Image 1 (tube, rainbow, N blue to C red):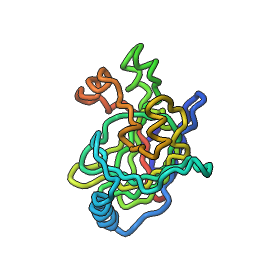
Image 2: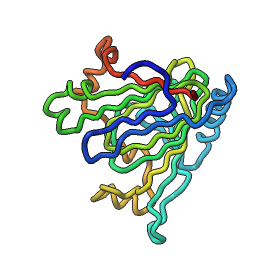
Image 3: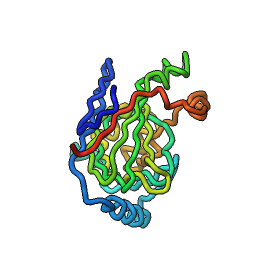
Image 4: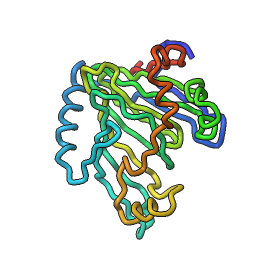
Amino acid sequence: MNNSVKNHVHIPTFDERLPIEITIVGKFPKGTGKTFVDAAFIKQATHSNYVEEYCEQSALIGKTNFAKDDPTAIYTFGVDHRDVLFHRHVGHRVIIGITGSKGSIIRFSLATPEEVKQRPQHFIDKMYTVNIAADCMFALRFNGTIYHQFGPADSSEQGFFAVTVHTNEAYGLDGKLLTKVLNNEGTIPLLTEPAPTEVMKLLQQPGVYHAVPTINLDFV
């Protein structure tokens, strides 16, 4: 993939998983993103369901109602000055976010846990980087089993703030985890599976992202 600026990206998975789709919905006046993101983080921290783990702050704002056949859950979450830990989770995700005034980076690895266990380098070989421009609203839809990481484009400013919809909070779960979700005790960190330790070590190597295909998104 080249470095030309696009409004939309469609990354196929070449398997049964849905493709990764990101669309830039609109662009705000310069600096507006920072104002929104900063205020949203402050407000989220006061929510009764606020949690922070894996360098990710979040809050459950819309609970499931399985008794009435509504399995969806709605969370707010944000990317501050830190990279969120590379992770995956079962279930489908729809995210609407607004970037800060220096933009944000999202990375995906299409490698499966089985491939990574066999050879950790597969994680990097199947990685994509998506740069989302500053002061933009974007929509992201993907299968959460794909390893992904959110981060700020510049650590001097917060990356983005978003609403994420888990379209079926119980999908693929079993045991104690399913019980917690059915009891409306789910959280984003509870559903998070960090990337393996071997991968984390690889990602610490200098220049590891230099050869990763990059897509630049903006409102064009």
